[in-house]
Image 1 (cartoon, rainbow, N blue to C red):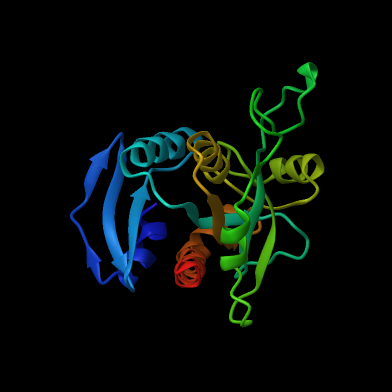
Image 2: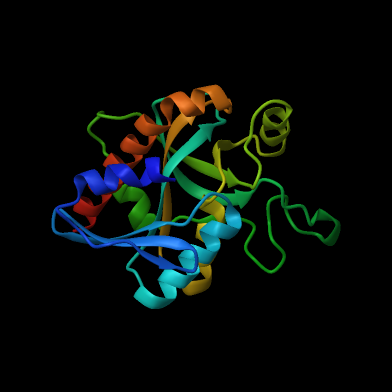
Length: 217
């Protein structure tokens, strides 16, 4: 969303004009000497996957990072925290009749794991933000109301839910590109909280991502 892209534009020393590729809006940024391709793909799994695939095929990035906001699921996760995804699954994928795990797409791994070096670089370690590392689930439904209980029961270890990260993780897996998600918690799966806190959540996500860039060198 524009709100999730804005913190990166605000931190950029240079930004190219916006280009459209496969429906995604793409800008080349320089943030503190680091070259960043900012992709605003739109909301949802298909938008995320299509935008990531088009740009990854053209650019061959060093890493893919899913940044922005998410809903908190874990009991220790609060609005204002940041969740870094260690593993990613689809909240509505169910091929268990054929022996697959819940959240697993047939032919794909049970979960899409984050790159270890990116995980380490995403943890600030200075206490400036509450950062949790754990599972993230993604689907095309905004998780609130009765759906919250269903997702928590199905994925009791999940810390957060969004509508893009797992699709991006799958694209990264297919292209062999290291991946991590970094999501600020805007809400505890409530639409009212989301609207109130999405800007702050996006800014916290961007702060962790920029720190990750510095630590990677």
